[in-house]
Length: 340
Image (cartoon, rainbow, N blue to C red; front, side, top):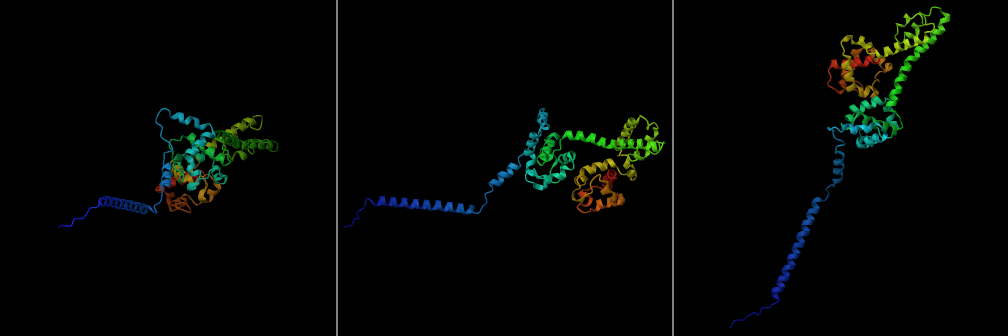
């Protein structure tokens, strides 16, 4: 007789429960293992999201080119107030001038701005419009007008404690220059009046003496100067004194005997030499300074050209350009013509 085993009805239930527990444990273990692997693989990685955001922000365009008829509407408000200069500064200039990056003069620093302000508003405008060093032309924003840039310069210089005065100053400078030129002629007329009683021949001793300095040989042709026409003589002399100032360009004609093209030389100076010789940076002799240039001019144009070609002091060979000897000689001749 076969022995029969009695089946327990709870065994299948217990088996299913056990299988479920084992499956749940395996799921938890696998999930934890995956999370651990993922976390460990990311451990030590730098979170550069902030840097990416900063770079993206700094690379955003600061302006756009206006090609429609409303372009003047953008430029119109700029020339009137410091508020517009402030807006231009904050939109374009603050990146460098707000931090002093790349050697830019720090906003509000009187010490940094003083030597630059000394060159005058026109020189600052020239630098901003054409670029200098790490600063691109028009601050890297070609959409800015001359009025925008001028307003920004006036705003920054005013914040540093300097009031360039904009257009008003330029207007005041012109009469100041003419008065400076006419003053010697007034002094000459006074000298003439004083010399009258001592020497009764006013035409010879009085006029040639003071007038010879402003290069005016024509004035001796007025023999009636000692009488009442003294103011007329003054006005004639003033006109003559102003005329040579405008005719300073022909003076270098003597230097032009070597075949130098002064017009091309001026163009090269404004593109290459202006950065150092206009401000005297790095010991460069200041453009137009006769005292600094006199010993150099005495060595001759060929010696000066040799210094430019080979480089001297902080100036690299050929001023860091690929200009030819003839082009460099034109620039040297132009600088000499304005500095003697």
